[in-house]
Length: 579
Image 1: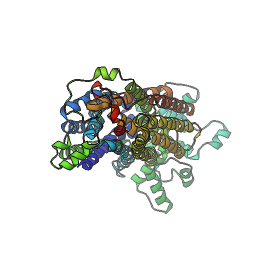
Image 2: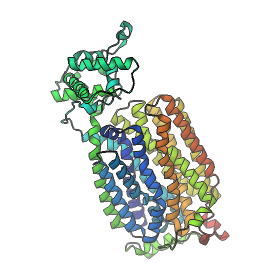
Image 3: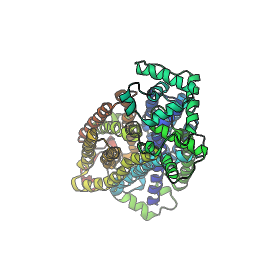
Image 4: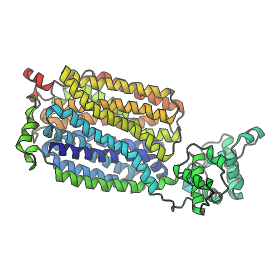
């Protein structure tokens, strides 16, 4: 039964990360759909980590008092509900509120499951089991962008109207300046024939708007906006152009590197001589126009993000039911866990670790505040999560805005780092257990935590010289691998020093890690600004590398052989068993 319990806990972690990071991939579409600015989006992403971080200790303490089964089932139900409700958001306030609710719901998941594993898994396999649960989270992180992207495409079928409206013009004045033909002959010769063709085919009223605002922009005007009526006229004029089957030729299409895969399929049909219907022609031209003006024309797939959130919410309800059916608070309470398995689980526990009590009388505030090792671990987790947050929140934006990677290809690139994390997570549990047996619990936990952070810092620095999106994805994969290679050591350290307060201690460490994540996106936004250039992204990579380095230095000072609570002091005679 201990293996079944671990498996169901892994399944919970998969859904947890799926719900957590599907939003990170779709946030550019949410921004566009709700007409939000970069600052609002940064706080939207950050809101989850604030509520998630600050609820860690109370949630862990609650699980220590009330037991894992009912509490964790409630957590799964709550975050699934708020995930589904994000899909109903009509503005920033509701979006922010639902995101805060997701953080509160997920806050207790890892502390509670960590406390549960400490009751269900033998001590000698504790790091491996913890690594498997964390690995399940990374499986969810791998699945999230790919599944989200493909579901978004599915939920915007080919029968969906592709015409533009006033909200599809994300930056009307800049679009006008790009559509307006150059005035001198040399620049005119170098200008895109496709762009010139779009301008020439526009109706006269739309063409006048392009000339007016395009001229103002080229003269240096700033902070100008199209009136709503003008936006509607320009959108209507572009729709008149999009129905033309001869709008874009094969040469025009071949010059584009960031066109959506659906447009590629339609282009292949065109090249085979197949006639596209009017709706298919409009859809094809819309995708080409999006690729030509990625920052000025809204994405057709923006309509697909809401039903994706509803699907994930329903899936979470199903997992909560499975969890309730299979879980019990301890081996002694499970009807299918026999006496032999209970003895096996308890047999190699070191005397200082013991079995966590089913109830805890008081919160160990004094012990926590006086633990130097725990504070160093908290600093390490803060720095790690601050830098790691880029990989799971801002990487889709980087690939979309810097490299203009289409949605489906972008989903695979975003998944590559998380896939590398799976390898690191699985290998990390094994290496930590083995290293602990060979050199003791002190350095068996500290070295994996520290050295992996230095490796992740080096991977971020490598991004300063990388120009290819796939090479960037590979460098970020190395950073993700090193980060997750040390996660099992972090979990095992918390369980080693937690004793009967293991849920609370895990909550404390997770709190500081996620405060790092909470600070990350608003500070990323300060570094990048609203329209980041390449140098701004490079500055962000240097900052992330520096925080990884600080994290590694702090990890060198932890000591897993000294428990937090005075009631669980290490007996010297237990050194061999704890190693």
